[in-house]
Amino acid sequence: KSRERNVSALFHDQLPRPVLALLEDAGRLGDELGVPVYAVGGFVRDLLLKSPTLDLDLVVEGDGQAFARAFAARHQGRVREHSKFKTAVVVLPHFTINANQPPREQKVDVATARLEYYEYPAALPTVELSSIKMDLYRRDFTINALAVELNPASFGRLVDFFGSQRDIKDRVIRVLHSLSFVEDPTRMLRAVRFSQRYDFRIGKQTLRLIKNALQLNLLDRLSGHRIFNELKLILNEEEFLQDLEMMQDLGILKAIHPKLEMTPHRKALLEELDKILTWYGLLYQSPTPRRWLLCLLAMAATWKEEELLALTVRLGLSKKEERELVTLRRSVHKAMDLLKRWCAGDKSLSELYGIMHQTPLEGALLLMAKFDDDCIKKHLSLYLTTLRGIQLQMSGEHLMDMGLPPGPIYTRILDSIRAAKLDGRASTLAAELALAEILVRQYWDAQQQPGS
Ligand code: CTP
Image (cartoon, rainbow, N blue to C red):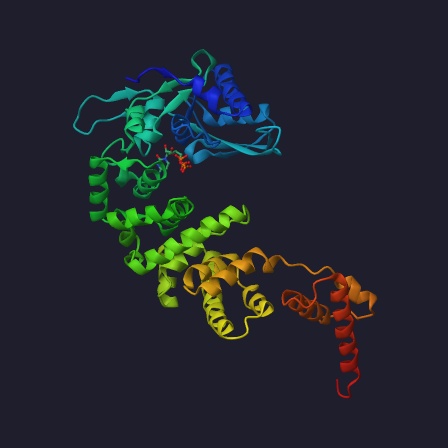
């Protein structure tokens, strides 16, 4: 029996008004269509943990797709339906959370809870479970198996059949039944992710079930693509390093691929990378570096290319992802050699720019993590924060005014002027133009040489 508690005060305290209004309206629509509607899953979990998310997940005890269509129509949204699973996503393209921010896209996932008959294995009587209870029972962990009713008469009523509130209070991740990891082995990775994110422990029985699942090699049954998706989610967490360590301790990493073990050397590199990502994240909100690229490359730092390719097959990377990974790896290797040589030379900034501006952002960050040399680290940071953004004050139009005919010479001259600027030899517009005049004259001189 579910313990009664109403969380509408939490809704009012924690949710932006427009989100609250949206949920209230979902409840009203439920009444109009004669169906109970609930907010469920991570949304409710994060509300109870007082760090609300705006990922709205609804479950309708009735026709979820019809509900989604009507809901989209009331809020000028679109709806994408997935008939196979009787789910739908409502997309509200211009949703305003508060007056200080521009409107953004808001998604609302809608699922259908069907009334099902649950057959106990040992010829016990078949019991009819309410459909929301069944829906929640099929979920991964107790902390994700809460629902909040939205229909007006009981708006905010918390539905907790499985001790979810107690587990949130006790800070523990527990599965709802012993076949949970058999049903869906990705849940092992999810257990780690939630455990680190919320600083919850994994319950004793749940830990035992993870170990059993690993012994049965259940991860082998999963498509690479599903594992890779979960890995990407893990790598996007702030605590990704602790996640990886926990996966190492549990034996999950080596179950994914024997070569993925965390050696001390890899761990040190990832720790350095973590610091650099934090540094970079504080300076720039976008573009966000693709962590999966960085972390896979850091893990594979000492592998041969064939070994890396074998991993990309196991993880079901798309051709495009595989290409990005291999290209980045090559550009990092190339830049590494060039940087070592650069360091032994006169360290001109233009040369540094020349080495780095072909390397994607992820490559620069990985190089910063790889080099112990303080001088290179400092210069790579200078490159990322300053050099790569340096713009000339003059442009191609100035060259056109000087009568230069269109062609690749434009890029060559502008590159030379940028190099001069980086090395402190053309810091004003006048200096840039003066240099341009010289280079244009040289161009004409060369044109007049016999044989040119
Ligand atoms: N779920 C599940 N088993 C999975 C994935 C998801 O039971 N393998 C259920 C959980 O109840 C979860 C809900 O589906 O709460 C939504 O899944 P998802 O959006 O992936 O997770 P969230 O819990 O919202 O977590 P996050 O904060 O990482 O988005």
